[in-house]
Length: 163
Figure 1 (tube, rainbow, N blue to C red):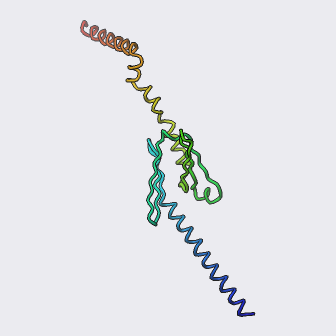
Figure 2 (cartoon, helix red, strand yellow):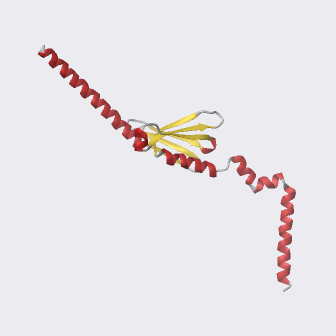
Figure 3 (tube, rainbow, N blue to C red):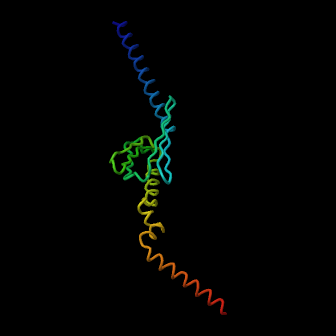
């Protein structure tokens, strides 16, 4: 009976050690993944660089003009305590969503994306604000404004010439 219990205790100890080594190894790899993943928000796109210590180097780019909605997800004690989370980006047109997991400082990235998106005009708005668009679509007002400007400049020149 004592030998049977001794074998059970050894099996339990070996199983416990294997589980502990596996758990520590997976946490170690998660920590590496956390520090090797980079999310960059530029004026034009979102770049997600995802690397690992084993043969993976992936770069994804999302144009900000294609972003319809951004959602920040931080669930649980560890995500809030260690300040990481998930960004869910909904793309316009296809209604597909892209999840970027384990993003450091997701609140900062969320605010940055919304700020860049708010200040960046859409292509149609940028075209409407462009002087060439106004000239092509309303040439009469452009010609009148040019005449008024020339008249004003001519009157200034005449007044300074006759003094």
